Image 1 (cartoon, rainbow, N blue to C red):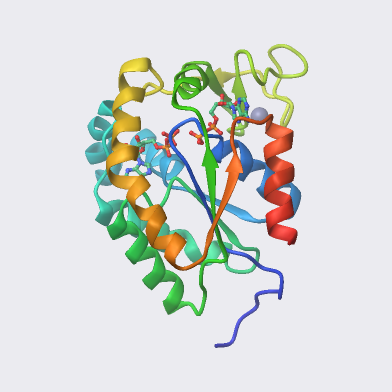
Image 2 (tube, rainbow, N blue to C red):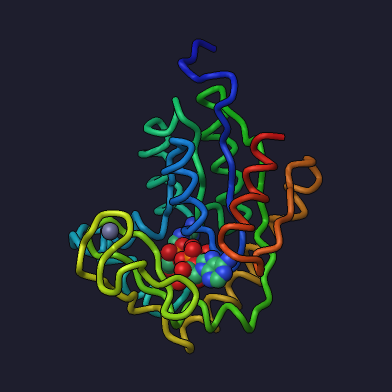
Length: 223
Ligand code: ADP
Ligand code: ADP
Ligand code: ZN
């Protein structure tokens, strides 16, 4: 199939429970390697903020920490997939169910693409609650921070864009995090064996520092 994709263009999934570091690593890959982050969580939050029909449906589900329907998130990914064609996609927070994994395979296949790696960020569950409850992001550019683990270099100023406003997610509270983790265990973890059977899964220790995790991911992408 005709394609404007470079020989080294990769399509990868970052897989792991809430707080594993998917968004942090996806943003870095986007900034350093020009890959495109496709985060269904970000797309849904945008729809909620705009009050679109999808956003109105998704809002309550997200606030409860449950999963939004496969049809909605698969459609969102389908709409954006071509924007990442030339540079490679980082799927962040998608797929989260077996049905979504099947949908992704079809969407990529239709475009003559296939997954190159599924990178599993392996993390200790108790650490995740602390990561999630301390998480905040730049309101201007979305750069991710943490109260203890990743504060801006100059207090109150975003390292990435110089912005001064930050925000926290309404679903980043302990109760919702427990539900999100249960959803991960019940519906998302079971897709790992499917990717393992295809030889796609690469494990990274997500408990290392952000820089060490980034180096491990780079080694996989360059390997
Ligand atoms: P996810 O996208 O998987 O939900 P994030 O990338 O948003 O996770 O990370 C969750 C929180 O943990 C953020 O506040 C982030 O700054 C912090 N964080 C990310 N990676 C690490 C790491 N390796 N060590 C410590 N804190 C981290
Ligand atoms: P996390 O930090 O937990 O990885 P995300 O930003 O990826 O969070 O997702 C936030 C919420 O958005 C989820 O709890 C869920 O309600 C919804 N969501 C995001 N991606 C998906 C998806 N692929 N399938 C179903 N629901 C999703
Ligand atoms: Zn910023």
